[in-house]
Amino acid sequence: MAGTAHEARGVIGTQANLWTEVAENRERVDYQAFPRLVAFADVAWSDLPAPDERDFDDFERRMNAAHYARLDALGVAYRPPDGPRP
View 1 (cartoon, rainbow, N blue to C red):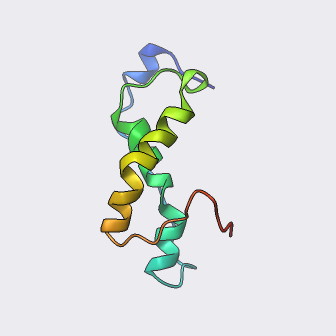
View 2 (spheres, helix red, strand yellow; view 1 turned 60 degrees about the vertical axis):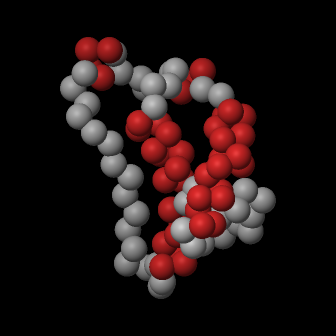
């Protein structure tokens, strides 16, 4: 349920939790966190329209154009868009 503009002014931050007790290594944490954290950052730091008006195809184009290459350069063991699925 979306809040009002008045309620939105009371939000002072965002967070994305990942509990790692059962993640046996860094690669598993990477796989569980990325590209989800890129999408989270896009929502948290961008001036986006309401969720039902957002353009997922635009986000996917930006992921393919730049962000996957950045994750590769950083050695992040992310889940690729075509799987495999856990």
